[in-house]
Image (tube, rainbow, N blue to C red; front, top):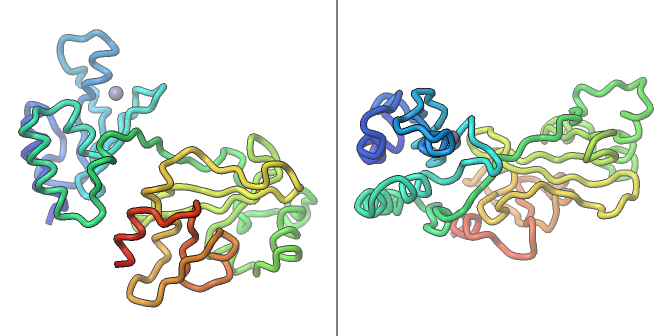
Amino acid sequence: MIKGREFHPILNSIFDGEIRGINETEQLQTNCPRCQELDGLSNPDGKYNLEINTEKRVFRCWKCDSPKFSGSLGRLIKIFGNTTDYALYKDYAAMFNDYDEVDDDKDFGFVELPPEFILFSDMDTKDDLHLEAYNYMVLQRQIEYPILLKFRIGFCFDGKYAGRIVIPSYDQHGDLNYFVSRSYRNQKPPYMNPKADKDVIIFNEGLINWDSLVFIVEGVFDMLTIYNSIPLLGKTLSNNLFLKLK
Ligand SMILES: [Zn+2]
C-alpha cells in the first residue's frame, strides 16, 4: 500500500500529471516550478529535480538552493496549488498526529554531518588526534565504547566543528535530522548545533521504544546513560514530543 496515497491526486492535478512514481510509490519526482521560474522558462524544465515523499510529507529540490527549496508537503501544495488543493491536503493531513499547520509556512533545511566527521567505529587508535576525542568521552565523560557505537557518535578534529564530539540524531526512518556537538577542548561555546527547527525533532526517535517507559532528560549526555530516554533540546517540550507522550 502506498503511504500518503490520498495526496497523489492533489499533486497530479497541480503538476499536470508530470510526476514519476504517481500512484505507485511514496517517493515521487516532478519538475521544479521554482527552477523553472529562476531559469525564466515558460514550460517545465523536464529535469524532475523536485523530490516529494508522501509518507514523510516532505519535499526538496536537488537543484535550487540559496536558500534550499524544501519543506513540508503542505508548504509545496500551499505555494503551487489553489485554495481547494490546500484545503483538501489539510483534511487528509489532519489524520496524522504529528501534523501541524504552522509547518506549512516553514523552511526547514536538511541537516548534514560535517564533512570532517569521523565515527568512533572508524577511529585510528594510533592517532593522537583521534585519541584526544576518545579519551574525552571514555575517560573524562565515562561513556562506554559500545554506547559510542550504538549512537553512531563521532568527532571532528578540524573544520568548523574542530575539537568537538558530534552526536547525531536519526529519525524513525533512519535519516539524519539533527546533531549536537560538544567541545572536548574547552572551547566557547561548549555546544554548537546546526540551524534546524528543534520544535519538530525528537532526538534519536529511531532508537526509542514507545511501548516501553520513555524518560525525558535534559541533555544529550544524559540520553547516553539513561536507557530509552529523549533529551530536551531546549527548556521546553516540543509540540511533536508532547503529542507522542500523550
Ligand atoms: Zn528547484
